Length: 123
Image 1 (cartoon, helix red, strand yellow):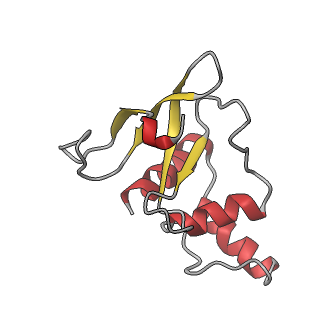
Image 2: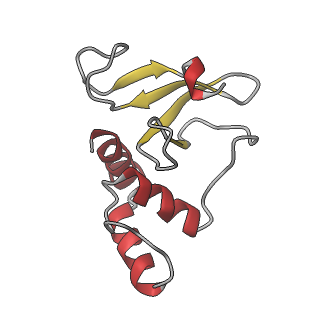
């Protein structure tokens, strides 16, 4: 999807880290790690990769710029969106995100942009 492409490209070009290759390598090395599609373009599989490889920080941890945040927008226990923290409040909570949502009310153009961390994101 749009959002996972943003993360994939940021890691590939900014950190020289191929999430797709790493995810497939983890799936092969650890058959007990369940990946529905074995595809980093699927937000839930991307989330699983970071969880399985102990690269997660949890909600009560202070965020830093560049952290990846995952969302379950449909409230169905399935991760369906991901973005990058671009600005943090002094409290350590995200203030803004680099986001590739497609067309939404806050982003009618559908282009990748910096959007505010909204109240429904559970600030």
